[in-house]
Length: 282
Image 1 (cartoon, one colour):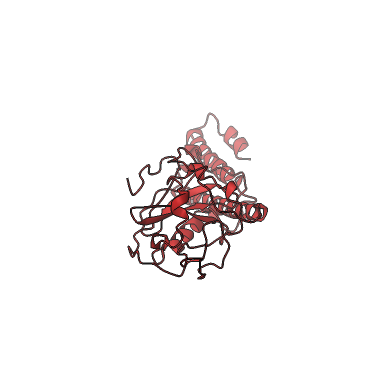
Image 2: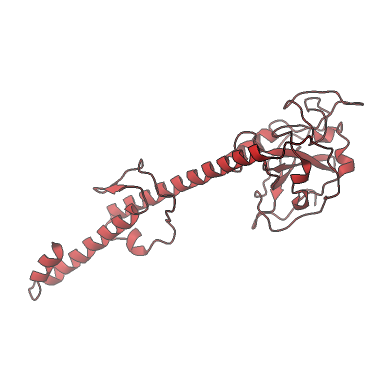
C-alpha cells in the first residue's frame, strides 16, 4: 500500500515531497470517510455527492473538525460542504415529519369528553420560559365589523369550521377551527401570554372575535412550515378582547400552549426562549 511505498523512500531525496503528498491524500480520505459515516451508505463517491443517500437518524454535522471541512483540496472541500448541507436538510425534514406524526398521534388520544364552557379558574398573566413560537408581526386588515362567518359557541363548542349558527341572542363571531371536541381542562391556559378572561369569552357575538382576512390561514401555514402540527391538528380558543382586538390561543392537541394571536393584525407571541417579551398592546 501507499504507506509501504513511502517507507521505501525513506532517506532518499524524494521522501519529503512524497510524505507531504501522502499526508494530504490521507487527510482527504479520512474526511470522505467521516462524511460517509453520517449516511446509511456512501454519499461521497468519486468526488461527487449523491443526494439520494439517506442520512442516519443519529447523524451529527455540527462541530466537525477542520480537517474534515478544509482538506486543502478545493474541489473536495466544496463537495464536503454540499454533503453537510444535504445531510442537515434531511435531518430537518425528519424532525418535522416526526413532529407532525407525534401531533397526529396526540390528536387521536385527546380526551373526547363532551366540551364544557371554559371557566376562568386557571386564568393567568404572562407565563415565562416555555416552548412557544417566535413573536411575529404580520400585517392584516383592521376591520372590526361583525362577521357572521364564525361558528356558534366558545372555544369548547363544536361546529363546522367557518360555518354560521345562531345563538340564543345573536350570531357568534367566534371562529371555530381545528379540534373542537376536547376537554378544556387539558389546555395550558396558565402559560398564556394573554390573560384568559372568562367573562369576555362569554360575549361570543362581539365583533372583536372576527378574524381579518387571511390572518388565520397565514398562522396555520407558518405553523405547518415550522413543524408544530399537520393539517388542522390544533386547538383554537378565544381568550380575551383588549383594545377592541380579539385574542385567541393556539394549542397542540394535547393542550400544550403554543402562542397567543391578535386576530385583527396577525401579531402572535409565545414563550420561546430568546423571542419577543413584548405583547402588542403593552
